[in-house]
Length: 489
Image 1 (cartoon, rainbow, N blue to C red):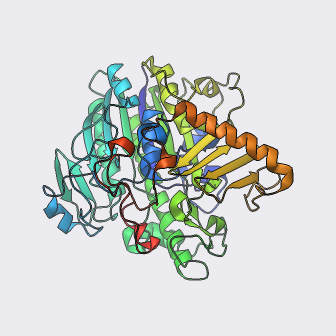
Image 2 (tube, one colour):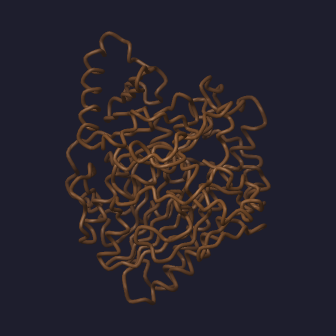
Image 3 (tube, rainbow, N blue to C red):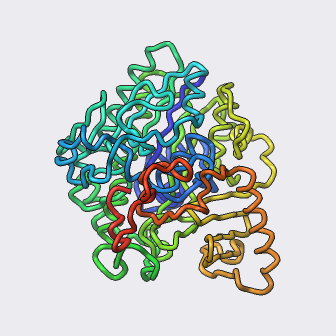
């Protein structure tokens, strides 16, 4: 059986790689994965914000079926037990925390499927799906951070049930080092292994003090012509950025975070080579959600605006896959439309694991092998009361209950600059696409957890959703200004 190394970045746009055509960013190891494997050019997250997107990857379900609708603000750690670490953590401590919450309790995950199929599973890096303190969902080895974010040089590391703030240690390097140690240990165990390597990069903060000096210096004179320089969107929740020094500072830090993470990916690949198992290992690289770094005048992802946006730059993510046993034509850019919900059934087919029957996704294993592709599909995304249906040619965005809704002609307007939802010639198309969207959620949503009924504002989720809620502020109090949301998400 193949070993599996699943590398997940945080807030990385599909555009932020050299192999994607960005000539300004330095990502030689990601480029190697694309050159020796496959790069999917139309891979979409299930929700354009971290926790719901990660939950969908793990469960194969949409947020309206697993109940994680926003970034998890409370339920990560025990606030009383870890109060001392909270005081030491300059990223914000644990003021919003109560008791750890198992947000996905009772929902099958692919890591549990792999465990049952004989794999030993290990995690190094960000979890952010509730209860960061103890191993969950089939993981036997557990090395993570307390919440969803941390300062790069002051991470709060969770290991063996305790939290330690590592002042002066770069969290990307810590995650990489633990992953390499895991490979050494797991490769001697006699069982196939699954290793999740979840970087916090390139999520903010992006101040120069947060990242290695050599990469800050490398990008200090970069003009960042690969990124649009557009006026701030009036609905953007942070700002101002356009026309200020913040644009260069943000991009310099973001690019530096990507390149430092790319070095970590290189270390992992070399470790697999040293152990003589690279050719017998499936290596996947992707991100939880996309990211706008000035695209559309937005600095953020789906909750970079209010109401939430569903631009391709928010919902499209990088997806690289290397495995000589599976990939028929290395170096291919695959344009098949694939959803994060398709990962679970793909891994099930690959490993012979048992996949739940009630999942919306479809295996794309045949695509990896260069066989006839799947029938034309559509992509669905959701974030609270905002939902999207996307085909190759059209995108429809519905915002419950009142709008504003949107329709984009992706052939004539691939940059999504003109909303044509109100054009009379598109009225029949809007009706058809809305019906298709409604039918999808009638089929796959759990009415007890339906996101269209939840008051998600982007300010973070405080407990389980819907009928499972245990406190009135399920999504946290709405901030005085949405700019207060920037910490911890």
